[in-house]
Each structure stands twice: as structure tokens, then as C-alpha cells.
Length: 119
Image (cartoon, rainbow, N blue to C red; front, top):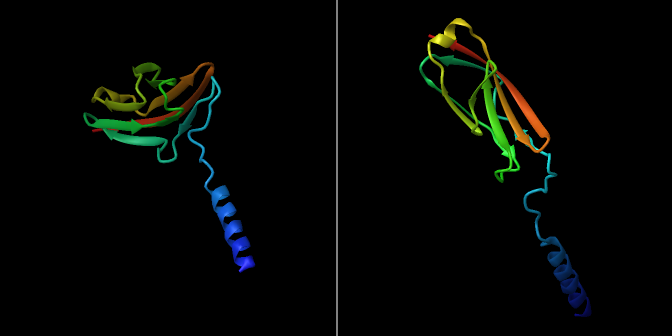
């Protein structure tokens, strides 16, 4: 019976230690920014006149990250998620360079994409 008390006490201690508080979101430095693009391709073919969307995941997601989408050197959006309609004018000079940039403080991350527009 004495051993049962020790075993129960040891199990109670192990259970208490295994239930430590889990960490929440990681702490970021003032210039740290991350862009997660595991499910995003680097090259796209788009039909002129249709909606083109790209959704990016950035961290930290607390409003401190500025996002910019640039198409052939021109800013087309300042949203994290892009919704854009490529008109028929884009067919002539395809492919196009699309850049997503996430900036926080002095830190920034760029992701590059190629977009070919067809009829």
C-alpha cells in the first residue's frame, strides 16, 4: 500500500509538470517580419478580365506590418491579400513581374511572382 501512495504521488507530479502553460504567439523584435508562402506558386497564368487573388500570411499579424503589391514597378495594392483584374492590355507585354513586400520597422521581406496574361 505504501508503494501505491508513492506511485500516485509521482503520477500527480508528472501530470502537473506536463500541463505547463503553452506559449502563445512568439515575440517579434521591432524589425522582424515573416511571410509564409508554402502554398503559393511563383508563376501564374491568368485569363484577361478575370479576378486574380493571392492571399499572403504575414507575422506578426498585429497590424504592425505594411504590405505592398507592385506590378511591373507600379504599386497596385497595399493590402495583405491581393485582388486584381488583369485587363486585355496586359496580354501584349506578358509575362509581368509581381512583387509582394511586407515591411515592419527597418525589416522587410519580398516575394517575387511571374504572371502571364492570356486571352
